Image (tube, one colour):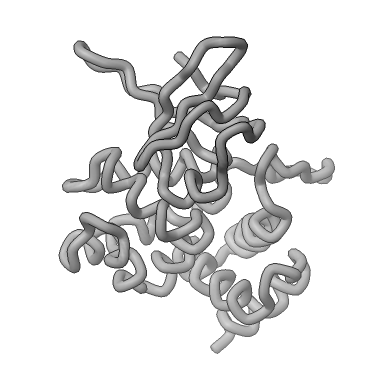
Amino acid sequence: MIGKLRGKVDAIGESHLVIDVNGVGYEVQASSKTLRNLKVGDDVALTIDTHVREDAIRLFGFQSEFERSWFRTLQTIQGVGAKVALSVLGVLAPQDLANAVAFGNWAAVEEAPGVGKKLAQRIVAELKDKAPSLSLSGYNIPTGSGPTVPAPNVPPSGLAFAEALSALTNLGYNPAQANAAVAVASQELGEAADTAGLIKRSLKELAR
C-alpha cells in the first residue's frame, strides 16, 4: 500500500494531480483546497490513502496525517463516500471542520458541493463524539513528562489546540465539552495562541 508520495507536480486536473516520482506519474485525487495551493513544477509530498478495488486502485492525497484521519472518519458516516469527504475538506480545513462539529455549525459543512442540509446535520451530529480524538490525530502527544513533538506538516496552532484538548480531558472534562471549549478559545485567541493560553481561556468557558 502507498502511504506517502514525494515528487514534482506534473499536471493538475479538476479533482486530481499527477505526481512525477523518479519518472513514474501517479494520479492522485485531492481536495480543491489542496489543488489550489499547488502548481505544475512544485515539489510536493502528500500523505496517501490507497483504495483498492477489483477494477482499480485509487490514490487520495492529503497535506497531513491529520487531514487523512478526517477523510477516513467522514466516510464512516452513511451517505459520505470518498468524493463527498474530499468535497467537505475542500471547503473546511481539518481544524475548521473540528470547530464546526464542536459548535454544531452544520451550515458550514453544507457549503461543500454535494452536501445537502440533512447530510450536513448528520455529519455534525455523528462526528461530535469523534472530533476530540480526531483533533489529536497526527500529533505525538506525550502521556508522561517527555517532550512533545509535532508530526510533519502539522501547524503549530493545531498542535496547541490538540495539547490543550488533551490537558482538559486528562483533568476529567467530557471530551465533547472540552473540544467545544477549546474551539471557542481558539477562535477568540487566533492562530498565535499557545497551549497555556488556550487552556486558561477554555477553563473559563467550561466554568460558565
